Image 1 (cartoon, helix red, strand yellow):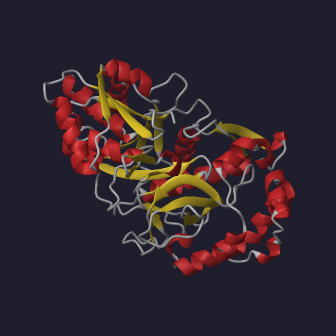
Image 2 (tube, rainbow, N blue to C red; image 1 turned 180 degrees about the horizontal axis):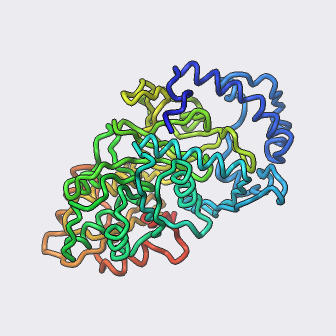
Image 3 (tube, rainbow, N blue to C red; image 1 turned 135 degrees about the vertical axis):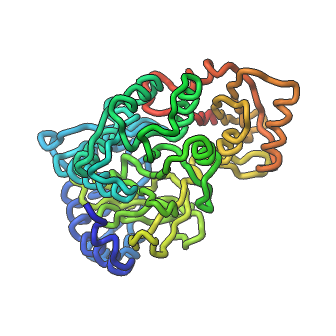
Length: 429
């Protein structure tokens, strides 16, 4: 598959394409979604006046609370049209159910196929999936279907178990992996401990999910550098969510995740729901196109990032999103400094001796935010805590509370029994 034609057109042409889809979407929502029918009625919205992307600002945004409180009212199809049921991970609240029709599954496969193409995937590739396909998880299934649509090979190993991953690499000789990037460090550690020549194995690239690989300036962050310093494979960062049923995936230029305008209308809004310009931090807000089971209109994801509008050297002219700086609900106001959890992770990932960690935020006795970082490490030198404190002071100007525990204890907290991915941040406010 080649780059979709719409993604090589000018931003103005892409805008006109999306505006042509708006009447169909709005009429569909009014006729099939109890939530949006109520929203239009209560706010006296005449959907025939919403003709341009700018006109979308006449419509109130949809929030995660809306979906959690009225999940059933968002569903637009009868049960006999639903093929698959998916739930969100519930990172910022109770999981939400998303029904998928046959059309939705085909759209999902198309999204992942063109996203893999963006990451230079070819039908001759063999992908090793290091992510789950069960537990009501959209992503694992999406990757599998996208690889099938691409015509490439796939081996479904699932998450964890470095020994099985390396055995599979030896047996199947995959050319690429799909994984959480921090797991690549575990694979490297296992290979070094067991004499595996990982630098000369068949794997040449990794499609990285769930964690950022880049700083706001699009350079590799500490996690990305640590991987590449050890294993010189090509890393492609992605940003996706169940709610949008789409992904923003990097190309070889590494200049942000590419938008698929045929699948999603993307807005970037401030805390007052006003659009922000390029170079300003904004919350990713999406309107899904082509979704049948549970389309969303102006849904605020909670994710904050910068966006870019200049054409990319790869030939795509669609906008791009930078790494997620943080989630609006996870903002911490600590001793007068505004902090998002990824800033803490970046520092911890750069400190030798830190095996793993979790971050807890709670309200202290004077009703302000308090941060406790629980660090897993094997050996604690006399000045280790001071060294960590100095890193935080230098980077953030403040020092959180720190406690040391065994890596095994932290690992059990990181991977709750029913979780589909590591849980690093615990908000107890």
